[in-house]
Length: 272
Figure 1 (tube, rainbow, N blue to C red):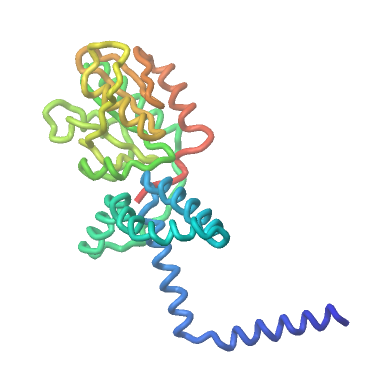
Figure 2: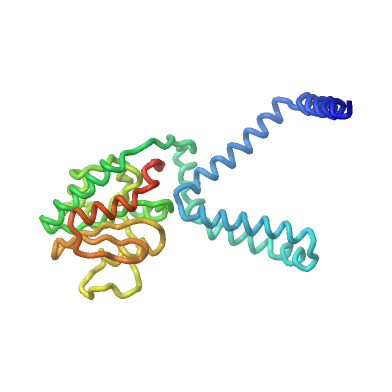
């Protein structure tokens, strides 16, 4: 009987809450949900995701501690203005992109992800690299990992084309407007070309390696991307990952490295 009474009271409370729901409250909730969804879409594919997670963890710990610690509560209250000023500085690239999208009246809801074929992407990249190596044409191809590269896409020319050996060799053909810089691949799409990457400050194994190799190592120091480099002078194929570079690769070694990079995840998303 007691359980039945609790159940009836629960039903009564739920019915009462449902009766208070109006079309204005529904629109209010949907609007808030849309704002949160748009913010998450804006940060997706950038390094700001890690920063946002860290801020959420710090905010949660601060709220829990401030409810019991008087001095800590005073510190949080007085630090709030500084935090509000720091957030726009930290997320400046993402906020700038949001304003640009609003100015172009571009929709915030982009297309969804689609499955891609890792084997085909590896085949096309290896075929392009072999051709560029034989012709001694310099090239730098960056394969995006879990950390997005939106900050560096801004410095190049957006393409959003399917990965193919013909496209890659055409981009790096000497004299073309996009050959000087890096190509960034996300999933099975060449998302941008002629991108400017950060240079490593560390000494490379061979003193003759130039800006292209320094950029290949530099981007992998910042995130979990993988860079494939073809030397313009020697045609040597190199791969950089986690701040380290492997030189003098053949097609078989390159394929093994790419397979290790793509497994057991990758190519399950296609960025906007």
